[in-house]
Image (cartoon, rainbow, N blue to C red; front, top):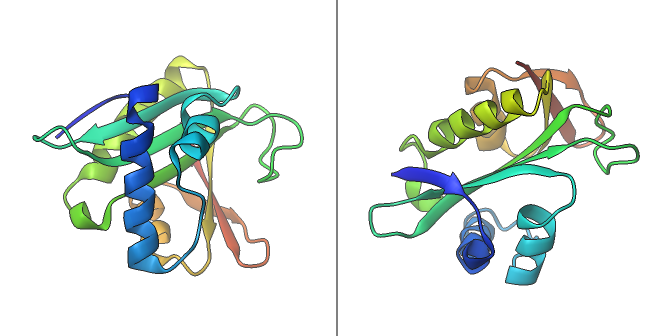
Length: 152
């Protein structure tokens, strides 16, 4: 397993990861390549989007890191990082999340961030457990959401 910065060529594979998550959880979300490009790869606030690739070259997960700007949809304080993690259920508990966060944490430090926000559905126990394991702590709980922060 290895990580690298996502490129436009990865949009379809990243969309496939989102489709696998939808099949596993039943939670609907956009997942086509154009959505992936706009939301993760080419977003103007992006610091880095990292993909995890298995030995066959398949994308099995990705993690985005953006810089919070005024009016962001998560109400994250300006200047913090905003993280999003998407891992195929096929590779859960195989260290993919830890590998991705290692790359993301380094990108955050290089960008001079002091904090990273994670915005997680309260009905997503695996997401909550993951962010706890990565050292995030709850700092806010809007209705149906748990927001966690990691101090760098």
